Amino acid sequence: MDINEILQYLPHRYPFLLVDRVLQIEEGKRILAVKNVTINEPFFPGHFPGHPVMPGVLIVEAMAQVAALLSFKTMGVVPDENSVVLFAGIDNVRFKRQVVPGDQLVFDVEILQGKRNIYKYKGVARVNDQIATEAELMCALKAK
Image (cartoon, rainbow, N blue to C red; front, top):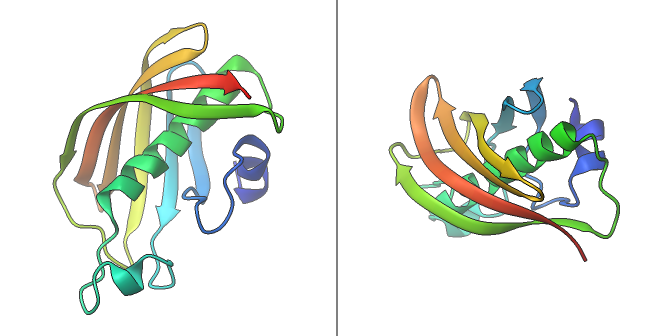
């Protein structure tokens, strides 16, 4: 999936769209996606001046956006303006490496469980094959 297709599935837009490309998707199972981290990100001037580090909560948010893409593709649904994916839970989050400008985050997200409109995922974000962040996410797909 390129950025144009991603924009069809996610309501997020700059500066909050945190997925640049989907490399691989196995509907119902897993997805690999990429976020290229640049010095131009709007959060770097304040996090932290002189030592830019991507906020961990935004890495988890990006992971959730990747999970939403997997869910919509799995369900065979292109969301409309009334669709939204919301966090229902975040467990076992671990930050193991700082993410800085110039890094490429590769997200590997798999579905652990799915019932009706609630999905549980295991996500790992890597930089150069090193784990940066891992988490279990639960998300609910809702109509507004």
